[in-house]
Length: 128
Image (cartoon, rainbow, N blue to C red; front, side):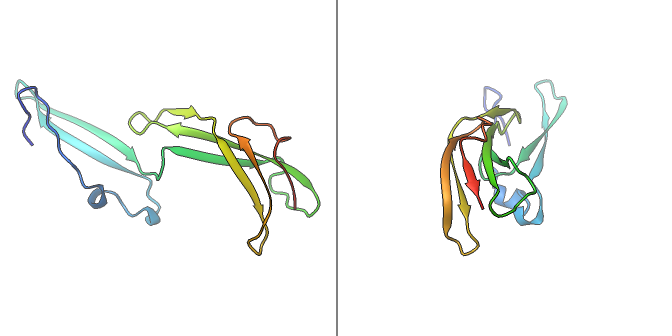
């Protein structure tokens, strides 16, 4: 690549050729840059890029983790955060999240909608 008169170079990179197969368990790839500076010095830089389907990630938590006994009531909460692709900084995001309790036959037993990052188990209650 050659820079323009302002010292800027742009290109398109086909990520399908660079990104590893997501099913192989990889979640990031690294780009290494080497370029010649304005006084002919060799400059290098690198960036690690996370591969995800969305910048949002969600984590569900039940008030009775690891206990799945019939007839016992439990609550659920959801935390959602957004990760900046370039910096990796995470920010909490408050959005509506619908949680469903689905029976083994695929039918919805019950559902509720909560606001993420509220951490109030009393709002969304289920019984198996």
